[in-house]
Image (cartoon, rainbow, N blue to C red; front, side):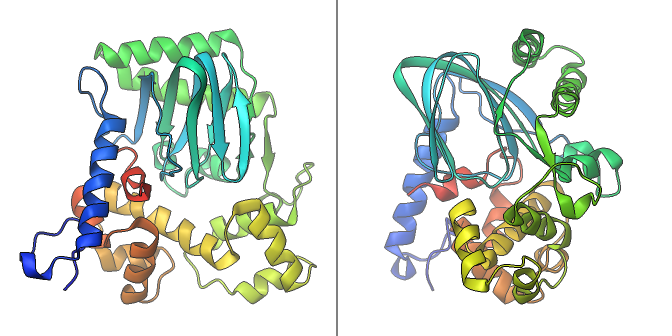
Amino acid sequence: MALECGESILPFSVDIDAALIFRDALIHYREFMMTENEQTWLVSRYFPLGIFSRDAYLQNMHHHIEHEFFYLETGTAILELRNNVAEIHEGDIVFIEAGAEHCLRPAEGEFHYYALVFASSILGNELDPVYRAFESIKINTFLTVGEDIKNRLKHTAQLEKEKTFGRKLFLKSMLLDLLSYILDSKQYQIFSSLHENSRHSVSAVDTVIAYIKKHYREDIDAEDIFNSTNYSKSHFSRLFKEATGKSVTEYINGYRVEKACLDMIYTDKNITEVAMENGFNNVQYFSRVFKKIMKCSPRFYKKNARNVMVPSSFASVN
């Protein structure tokens, strides 16, 4: 039997490579998450929303199952997001969607930033109009916001640090106001497959991504996706790979696993229920796909990642 990401078993059956990967990942994860006063990025399963003030960011490519608004207060940094590299400067705000591979390092000297990190479930369930509105849009990566919004982000972080009474109300209000600002200033696109009368033009790739997000719980036929794009299979496969860094099948499985992670953190569903409700008709296949993406078994993840805000970061570090 091989070691499964931290399972405690007899020494003679240990998979040394897996043990070393797990050890190094946890060390890196702890170094990344700890602040000077040893506060970690933890969040209640019932309130998947947090705001953090930091002077260092994980420099290895990683992803997490929550969305992130990143505000660079001071300094200059190099952002790698998917297959793109950009220099960001003091005052810039970036939106990093859930599951997007990214890292950030200082361009020169030191920098300080604020991160507003949240799971979409904080906006309600799948029948909630607020949740549905958020899931139907693609927020611009680079955002322009007023100084009042930036000052509120800093103030909200201070309330959180001081554990002020009612700080969670301020925090959720901050998120809703920021999302409202983005909608009001039209810094987004509506996925055409979710809004037929959209006046925004979106690419075939965005249309397919929207379709996957809407139907990921169902049995998605990749051939039907290719046929709906008016491109040849080989041509669209290349376009999709260039845009996302993944094949269509990899993207579908990755999105399903991200949603499964949220269920394991924020609900009491068992692994079979999680698999079946996120588009996997076979639990064994779910386990294989999950381990390939997250580098650990669903059982280990469910047991150890429940209260970690950015649980897949440690699984992505080599």
